[in-house]
Image (tube, rainbow, N blue to C red; front, side, top):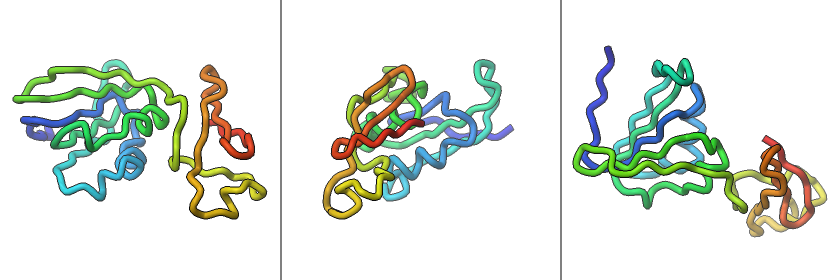
Length: 141
């Protein structure tokens, strides 16, 4: 049995779809942080069969919940203090995301003007559809 020590203070991202933890790791910029991060892949789960878990040492200020909600809004965010879970946060699809996805329309202003942020707005929550702020190009997960 693999044993990963508990966190005294930090964040545990739980119920990540199996195989998605590295996408989350890089999209959240955890590779650029100077803190301990543990990634557990393909852990057994009674709910999901298999799941990934990410443990991050430190406070919630390292995590952009909008990015996390966009990637997978079913992830559970557990806040740990003094070796105990003190709060659980549920995520939702963000209404607006910036510089997470890029517009694929070659005629969009963002493909010409490199300094412009790639901003998308949620237009249909049911189908998880986002549209580019500048050209209305559709992005569906």
